[in-house]
Image (cartoon, rainbow, N blue to C red):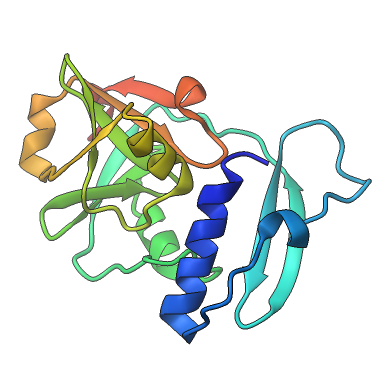
Length: 184
């Protein structure tokens, strides 16, 4: 399992902030891959509150992204990785003929539907300091100094030449990379 320590840190932080728990769950002890999971890429979904409710393994196949639609919502909140994605689904439904969305909140760039984002200015990659969900791959990339956190407003997008979309299932080397003209 990739970046397990980052997933574990987020899980324990969420448990503490939402429910006041101070004990720490060790994912390596809680998640056991069933024999039914083959060698292909799989996503592990863990649903919990005070106890683990469901551990589900699903085959994963990356999405094809060619066009990104800007969408706007100043109240959307996805600080924690909720099972309930209704707010995000409503925004995704506004994508028109695009494959993905780029969410703008209070004039600031946040994330896409399933990914954190980074932008290239010709010298370095920058990720918004206003993500809806600070993902585990994002945390790893920040710590390894492949990306830098920056305040990025919608107006700042004109200063970049490329966008990359990444998440826990899509590492930096395999991230979707597009020219800024793909964002409408």
